[in-house]
Length: 194
Ligand SMILES: Cc1cc2nc3c(=O)[nH]c(=O)nc-3n(C[C@H](O)[C@H](O)[C@H](O)COP(=O)(O)O)c2cc1C
View 1 (cartoon, helix red, strand yellow):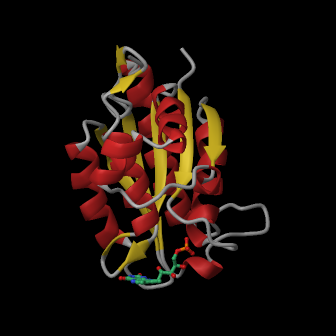
View 2: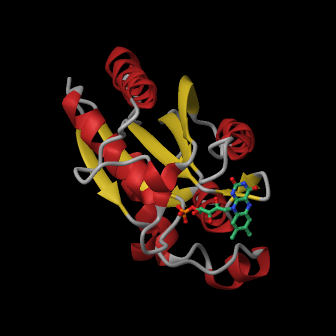
View 3: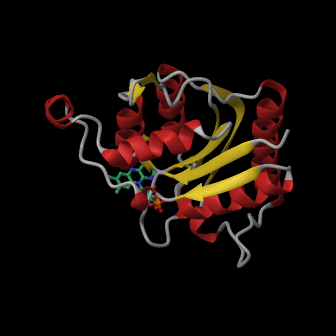
């Protein structure tokens, strides 16, 4: 079976270092045999989660679109920026909206359930955004995903990628490779689509 993997960065900023990490993960995942789709949250603009809004207007169409996209894949690689030691709001808001989906038409539908998730972060600080991953790991458990142990935090990230989008530091490239391979192996072993 060829695992299908969605890759997304929690930043839509031009020149985003997490976008670069997502690009590098896309290459590594394909190298390990994944059928990889890279998306941008720019294509899924969403209002801030608000339960009154949900009651009045239902789940926003872009959240449904994103949820269907997630559910159509075995696994996800998420590259997470770190804001004040935690998850950036763009990413958290998207995760939360998708978690609120209970049905698609008449059918019960939980997009996050059983998806395999690999986490990465990039920051120009020395910790590489690892504190955001500690929080993101808990959140992804709460929404019902299976998170793999391996993860990849890239410090001093502005200078970490070469022109081809690969990590220049061998040790760091090895960590990203192990993270991506583990995601592929988990998806192959268990499969995850509903
Ligand atoms: C509100 C805010 C808080 C931040 N807090 C942290 C932080 O706690 N740790 C860190 O390493 N970088 C922090 N940063 C810097 C981001 O890591 C940096 O802007 C990074 O480039 C964001 O990722 P991106 O390039 O993918 O958008 C913060 C940035 C913002 C805007």
